[in-house]
Length: 325
Image (cartoon, rainbow, N blue to C red; front, side):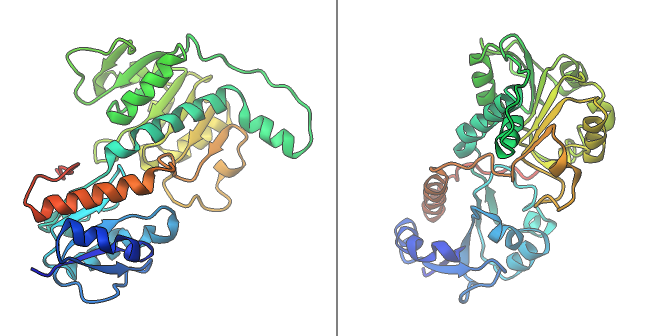
C-alpha cells in the first residue's frame, strides 16, 4: 500500500530513504514553517513534529495543528521531538485516531545536566562575572557551596530522578515530589513525598527544581502562596513549563528580596517579550527554552521516529506513547 509520511521540509531529502526503509514504499511529504504541505497528504499515516529552533514552533500548535489534522483523515502517528506535549493536545487531536508519542527518554541526560549547570551558575555567581567581564570590571562575589544544601525537585520522573543523581554527587540533600511516591527511595535521595507534602518540601529547600509536565493539575502550581513557602535565600530553577509558575508573583518576590534568584528556561509567553522584567533583573538567568539541546538530539529523535514508523507498519506497540487522559 502506498502511504505518505509528513516531515519538516529541511529534513525531507535526508529522511526519504529512512522512511521508505521503515515503511516499504512510503513517500515523504514536506511541511514548511507555515504549515503548508508540499503535495497531497490525504493518505498520510504519520507526522514528524520536530523543530530544533523557533522556525517551526507555530506550525505545530493550536489552530494550525487542528487545521493540519483535518487534512489528514488516515493519520495514525504523531511523533513529537519534545518531552512536553501540552501544545499539541488540542481537542481535535484528542478526538482523532492518531497515537501521540513523545521523546521523553531521549532528553533525560541533557536536561538533567542543564539543571545542574543552572544551579552551579547561580551558586558561583556566573551571570555576575559575565556582566563584569563585559564591562572590564574586576569585582569579587560571595559564592555558595552546594555541599550540605537541600534541593527539592518537583516532578520526580526520568528528568527529575537524573537531576537528583547529579545533585547528590555534589553532596546535596535531595527531596523529591512525585504524584505517586515509590515504595522504596533510592540511596542518593533523602525522601520522596506526595503532592500534599509539597509546601513542607518547598520550605526546606535552598534550591527548587521544577521538572513536571503541564496539566490541569499543575497549571499555576507555583502560586504566590507557594512561592511564599520558599526561603528568601532560595533559588528557583524551572525547566518544566512557564505556566506552572505565577510569573507576576515571581517577579514581585525577586524584586523585593523575598526570593534570591531564579534560573528560567521556560516562560508563559515564548519567546520572552522585549521589555519583560526578567530580561533586566540581575537575579534572573534567562535561557531560551532549550534545556534539552544536545549534539545528539537530532540523530536520536530521527532514530526514534523511524523506529516508531516501522513499528506502525508492522502493527507493533509504539514507543513513548502518551496517555492523553
